[in-house]
Image (tube, rainbow, N blue to C red):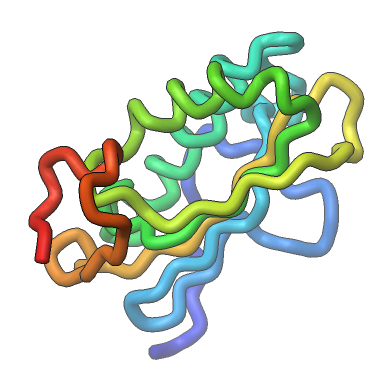
Length: 149
């Protein structure tokens, strides 16, 4: 595959030496993203739901540009600044994914920019929505709609 650059409209410019995502074959690595607009301004100050939604909407745009969808996401890593925001973030996050859900890690930390409540990074594989196998506990509440073995 030749090295190419795909531009996605509406994305804020990177503030360092990185890109929003890298696709190698069918695997797409999405850089850690925060809730900013196309000019790099914070979106949703104090509102973890809005910040979660803004980041995941950006991921949706990037994935579309790569020929993938949110259903192709296989792993996310979420950095959360305050565990009290977990229920609201988790609920909003759940609106962007359907069973079978991607693997996920959520860690508590501080972030570089004042006002940021979370940062999310992800890995997607084009076609994973049709071919992934999910391993989970029997009777898990989060397997509704997923095929069980």
